[in-house]
Length: 145
Image: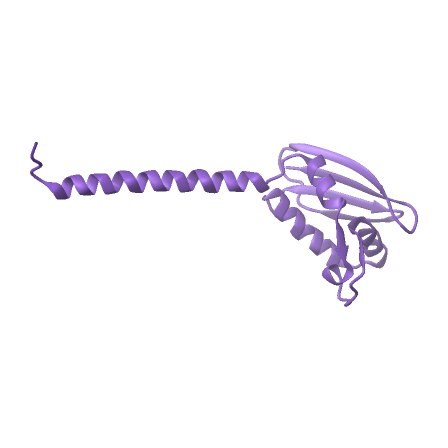
């Protein structure tokens, strides 16, 4: 068997290999993105609000003390410190992979804060009360959209 036009065959094989590689890359990117997305509000709530943070990570102070995030949130609500809320907003945007597509309501004593847009159809919701080290409970309500 003798091929008359090797360039045409080579171009076709190159195109097939290119399509195969692109297909594999799309599959890998899609799979890796699914690994990091949390779709259940209870999973997000448990993962985020069980974390411990350094004070220097969430405030302007250079304190290396490590505290539960819920204690730091309660203190920031009382003090009116928005740095912790901005930090929490970045975490939720990253964990859900849908910036702002949630509604997080937090209440400690008479202080409260709301993060997210809460627009659209609610996919999942979770409410949780967490004891705060210096007394009282932090009420957390998270809705994912």
